[in-house]
Structures are given as C-alpha cells and as structure tokens.
Length: 193
Image (tube, rainbow, N blue to C red):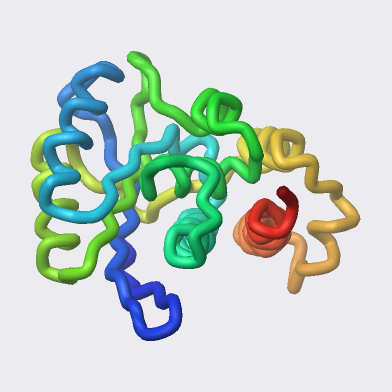
C-alpha cells in the first residue's frame, strides 16, 4: 500500500493506492455501491481494472493532475473520482476513459485509490475496502511482457519512447520507463482542451 500526499498551493490531500484481489467476488454493481458508501468518509474512492495500471506512479500522477484540475477549476467531469479516471486513462472522453479503465463483473484484481484531507480516514477507508473486497496484492501491479505490450499499445507509447528512460533492459526497468512515458501523456490531458 502506498500512502502519499499530493498538493495544490496550500491544499494538501492524503492518497492511498493499492491493488486488491477480488476474493469476495463482488460484481461491478456491488463494487460501485461499496465505493459510493465509502466516499462519504473521504473525498474520492476509485476502482480500476488493475490490468490497465502500470504501477503506483501511474495512479499517483492521475490523482495529482485530477486534484490540480479540481482546484484550478478546469475539471472535465463533475466529480473528483471520475476526473482521476480521465487522467489515468489519458483520454479526453469520460465514457472512453471508464470503458478502458473500469471494472466489470469479472474483474479479479482491482486497483484502488482513496483520497481525502485526513490521512487516518484515507487509510481507514482503504483498510475497510480491503476487508470488503479481499487481500492486498504485494508487490502491487506485477508486470508481464504481455501486459507491458498491451499497455504500450493502449497508451500509444512506442518502443523508442520507452528506451529513452531505460537504465537496463529488464522487465522492472521497462515498467518504470513506461510509467515515466505515461506520466507525460497524463499531463497532456490538462493542456489540451
């Protein structure tokens, strides 16, 4: 579980990111109801199909950009949790973003973000979600060659782009390089209207 803070001027939010195994076999509606009930404790609770997530940095960048859009009054959506999905998907259209990143009835592993002003509430909400959904997967967001290729294609990131950020040519380095490329794509969403 990653616990961090994100900032916009003097405003600071706590963010918790993890990947959970859907051991309780909750379907999409159950998960959406759970997110809705938990969002009363924090500012945002968002679930993603973890197969579409590169790593924690991917989600941290999406949340920071969504927070900037919220505070800067240039959000594309009406809620912070949906705004996070838009940035995580690097898409401009809400429907397309949800289609790419969203959960469904067969989602086996779920990436989760909780975001709020109170660190203890953010962490507590994540622990409640873990209890309701299933165990935390560690290490989170395991990469495979197939997943890497799928994500590169989905986000239209070329091999030459990834190679710019490579220290060495192993899977962990390629995952990190892909995340760096994706952070750039995520930031572009804010600048293109």
